Image (cartoon, rainbow, N blue to C red):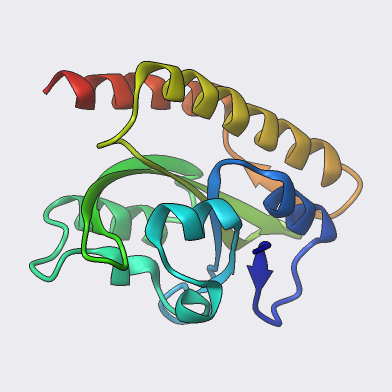
Length: 180
């Protein structure tokens, strides 16, 4: 299996990041109604159990349990509704294709084209099964991916709006969830 995309015109650099990343990644079209997924990678498919043809074109709320995701859903809506909010992280209850529930640490970063938000890049990490070594690998892999993406998009009009500091703080969220 490889990363898969809809017919959306995505930067080649973003597609390469998706192909190489070990982190579960998705990209959604911010400009389309309901922010549908336009790209998913192998890591996302492995984490959730879904194939690309089952998820592309859908908003990722299909991962939420039947009774909803609770208050975090409003925070996600607020983030998506505010173009000035550049990046955010959420811990959200999700359900895999086979019905297995898991907590999903989702880090979202808005991508701009010519100064306007066009896409939302999200990384996901299932925190229920994670071990301490997984946290370190996740943080390092995500940081490397974001660095590569920034380097690859430097000569285009695409920009990644986010900070390495925000990425690094994902470690503390994962660690706290393991203590509870």
